[in-house]
Image (cartoon, rainbow, N blue to C red; front, top):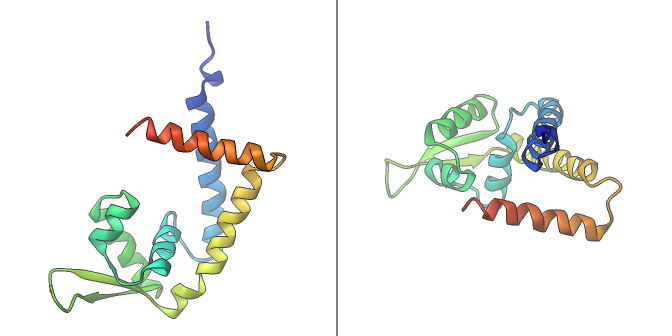
Length: 140
């Protein structure tokens, strides 16, 4: 009988759980909740995205984005403004406090990447990235 612990899916789930645990711990020190850093990263690239655009880009449901934006707004990290052309659209902008968290949050992700790739050659790291991209594409 084949032990399930030897399956790729099981190893991947364990890696994801540990990655998320360590990310949560590090991000909490910055005052961020899980996945809020992704919104910061997107808004840093393109400030003023609508909540619908954030939901689509992050592949999350709109109510999840709305709740997260509200939490970030209460923390002073973002502000919402009604779109000038379409008042049904709420655009999200980084505040100075939100902008200030970009580098520390990005450093959390760089540190996590370094931990994952510890003892891997550059070729092995490139292969891992390619294999993960292919595995994800297999579900599309």
